[in-house]
Figure 1 (tube, chains in turn cyan, yellow):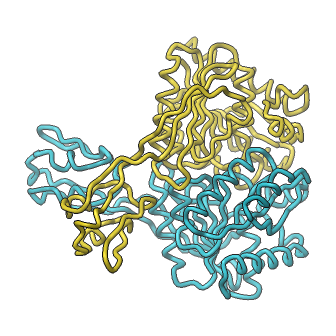
Figure 2 (cartoon, chains in turn red, orange):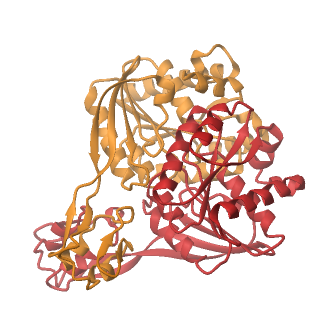
Length: 283
Length: 293
């Protein structure tokens, strides 16, 4: 099963749910946890261990100034304004480049080839038996989150049970992370912010045709609005985690709730079974 | 006009709650922008009156005419975004994956065109503290960085002579965040005392330093883990980043959000008082910056 954890609103507890779910499942089988929040990846903070790391690159154009006739075709073609052709040289703005390869195709003088440019890193580790952690990390200052997410997901292609922790929001990084998943847990909190963004996140899962269920985190018991929304939209509330200073402190220190308070493991097991039912898959 | 963005790195640390309170407390004329276009929430606690809405056209999207497609699959082979799917009778573009690069149009000018597509809307509102420009990205759409840019530009055009341009920013360090902080004078990073908060703070500071705003930090819910608040304070001292506010955990914050008001308008609780102190320090920063100009 490929399971995504999303939220719309940031800081609702996606990583907390993802980490505890993976920690619990790893006792009984093989699970792969993929950190797709590449702008601010945090899962490695809960599973500190030696990781093997490699660079992620994107191909970007390099212009051979001796062959270039400064005809301007590449600059005209580039939809992102990454190439500006001056009478005697070309300016290339790599942060605007989407690596589509169009400039190399349109150049009539064969003056453009591509070379890899680093945009982030991919780390793989085995923090406990049965658990593989894959973390994509976008280099600070790079805007190219999506290709880093794509590489991180690719690393888990053949793994049977994968949990993807996504970035907050509803835009391209979330779509990339959710693509191909069998089910999605949307983590929310019982505030107007939480509810507003839950609606947006559910909208995205619906557009992608991915079945979704809800986890309410840091509940202070005033969940009526969220409950009403879930009932109206036929969304199962699969788990409710109460607010407590103790749970907050465990999480804030980088510890795992299920390790410190093992009685939570059965709740996360049951969450997983509900996800499996939601996805309609065996494992 | 001084441009101030409230950002966080990690999501859910209290950006919007802080921005709403600062909008009420900071003196002078204001223009507000909500640049968290994926999940814009400022309107929920600032009660704007919507004046008008305009469509936002993002990057263009390729469209294949099935009548003219010979199913040669050359478009699919050249697409680097896996946005083209070829079925038995035709090829089609997945608009969620298409980045509008037009490479497919280049290889097949007969059957493929590139067309504008609405990826969001920009809203103009007024509030008791001035104009607010906010946006709504079509869920699942790309180009949020472009939409952020459009929101900022539109907001500044509303009142170019105002004293302060106050931005509620997005989480993260990627495209929308970079678009938000570019051109700002000050960023206020709202963090929380968790290892994730500190880790994400370090990353977002690294991004900010590639631009040139003055960087300030506030620690929200600082009393939930005092040892980590201390660690954040030490790191900021080493980096010479002023920590201008420490806001305690206070249930009045959630209550005020539920009532749709700024926490500083809900009575003199501990969080409200801490934010007033924060606003006073920020006022000093703004006046220092104004004097240097």
